[in-house]
Length: 276
Image (spheres, one colour):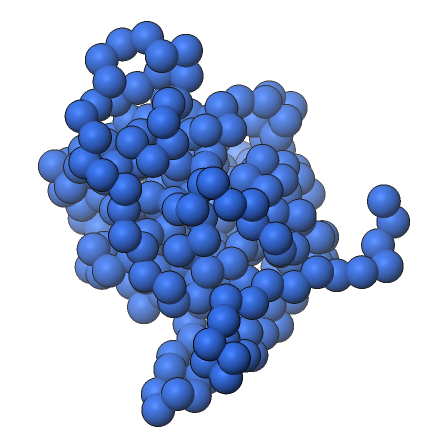
């Protein structure tokens, strides 16, 4: 379902008002906490995946949000739509996806925003954003793995828990949630980024996001594409090396959350000394 166009043509969705994302660090989606319906199985004999086209890396990108009805999908989706990309909001429920897409369009003011089920928004996408909760991501990836073959997949969730004012990182056996996603969808091109940004900040489009993000991944073309999208939403990307380094980035979010608690703030950081 198409809700809007970059040039303003077509029917404009009625405004559902701006979303109200929570202030937890990392990607959070309270609406998408179950695994998706099983998709087509992977073809074990599929050929080697090619790198993304130059258009997918540098031009207008088709971006699908899996579980996009939560705060990560709403705020980040709106920024990407405003930046001129085609945004598709996915959900287990098409109705919820439509409602969320209307909020994204209202927040962005204009842009190309569509909505459908998770299974239907993935095939046409250049980039798939996993915007489900951390505890729902592993099963979601396994269920949708066949559709993720060859796709650039952004993992931005953090398995960080908070109890009695203390934050702790509970990484999976694979090392990080991003690495676990790569294991669950071995033919996907998984990239880890945006863990350090509080999702509520994405929805405040009138404010710049004063932060860096460390981007990790094993596929150079996929990492380049995600770094370009980060820059498009006002976040400076820093190449953090292979996907195995994502475990350190995810774990560091526990430190950021602890600082937020201690100072009652929403901190960000900059990496200095880099070449201009």
